[in-house]
Length: 199
Image (cartoon, rainbow, N blue to C red; front, side):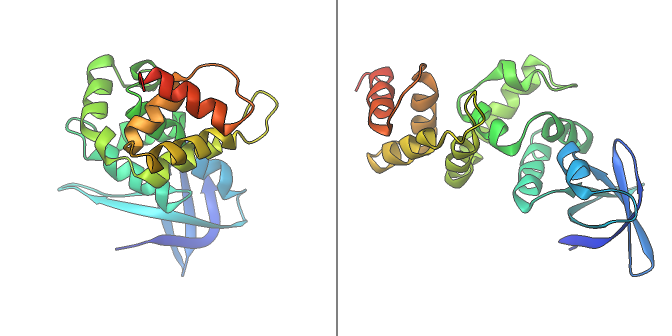
């Protein structure tokens, strides 16, 4: 199993990289994030890799992080969704945004991805919402930025606090997202989130 490839970027376009390492040029079909973070032709790059072997092909897919690769594997595990659609999803949404969309059953966000219709989005939610990790959710909320571009860590703290109160990660995330409005403290957000749950 190849974990990552590190070498010089020999070629780059809008969908793939060719990284030369050890005298071999590895062709990687990448997410938009991986392409943006890889750098320019001639520069050194490190890309995490997933290899998919079919009867008539052996294809390498490239990712910025192991977490992005893990989400790719979860998506391709959904019936009827292949690697190309999974790359489209992760090129349109970050792992954080997708994790939130899955647990909050946000079909409209998922259907914005090219190749994903309502039926496929519902199937993704049904098969993946229970597979989203707790750390993906807390990281997801911690990664959200407000209108001024500042980290909105209050949401992440609120999710963690609700989980400490006995909420599952999915319940906590849904409650925090349902608490619409602007809050100056974790306490205010938790109160509003509990109100949405009828607590």
